[in-house]
Length: 328
Image (cartoon, rainbow, N blue to C red; front, side):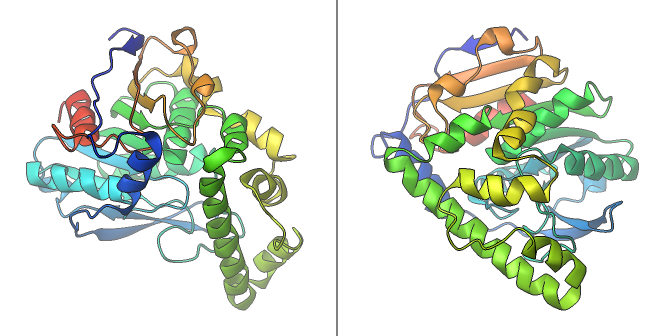
């Protein structure tokens, strides 16, 4: 596969013509329910990550491939874009799992630390444990938004692996600082305010939980100060995400975790799906072909919004594009 940009194959449905409507429809549209079976992965630092398997048993599935999903910011294994994919995979008898980042499974994790756009070490640990459990299976990865950034960072750090066949990254915030700044401007501020409210709420709930069960971890959170006046993603990352996870501040976090810096090192065959009218990702933050490794294929569309890509024919363009690339 050659590196570079392919022609635009996506045409939005007429009643969702622009990026905001595509983005919001994907988030709030009804999706088919998918039955999950939960597995808890105990981590080396005494925390845990929950993964949710589809109803297809990998030992009884069609073929030897397991599809591994990574959700976006404030998402989980039941995010609509993951359920839409798992529904199609179930119909084909293909096993899949969705990894919930720490604290995103509906149960608080045990440590003060949480998840962020660069937690590739968590993906690596979960993958290593699962590949040992299923040594005869190949894995393909699909990441969305924050999960896409984590995925690309991890692939760039890791190099090749015999059990990883392909990967897809959808609506990736390649340059985290640019995306953080974009959510301070115009109508995109609405998205930023939504994320901040969710993050601060989750952070406070976690502090209350840890005060009862792990007071030493609650103290680590208390040392970060009051969250009441945090008004932007940049502020949250500077005052909470960065110090809680060993970064010097928001800029240091963004610099070290932006996936753009890792793209040239990716050896796994990878498809990037991006839209020029994504309200969360400025077009100038999308890397050019000169920054992509020979293993990367970029599909850059004029329309599609953020993890939207809702068309009329087929309606599930995004899911079909992913399946076609993964050859499932």
